[in-house]
Length: 210
Ligand code: SF4
Image (cartoon, rainbow, N blue to C red):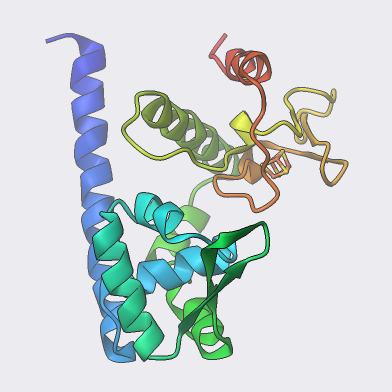
């Protein structure tokens, strides 16, 4: 077996362990609050993305539209979300968090303390590399059609990779007009706007290993 294949299988096994831990932590966070893990994930998504259409939530959750509608109906009965007309399209509706939904979302969206401690135990250079690797892997999955498009710096029209000489903060965000480093690469940024194909290709090639 090729070394790269062995490496990817080992890494996939490691990611699977972390994923199992996150699923278990998701259950533990959701259950005492009277939520299913999908309902908790839906609240977290709405807190991160703001008011959204049902289809967008379904794709981000990786469930069918019918299943997302069931989840939203349950959250609506609990008065945690509400449907309002989309100001940009009179025939469509957006799902909003209610004040109670926002409070609960803030609790369930918090990553488990054990995971944040494990990440904080890494050296700053390891965290930056992990961030960079995650960005590239998520983009690869997105390009393969395995996951829905994510709001990554790597695909954002405001992203200017290696715009600065500062090795700690080489990149630039033209939205907030500020320099930042690999450890601050965003994986789900509310200000993200999709870049054109040429800009995305150029950002990705800047991130290819030398
Ligand atoms: S707007 Fe957000 S996604 Fe875009 S470059 Fe800035 S931080 Fe990254």
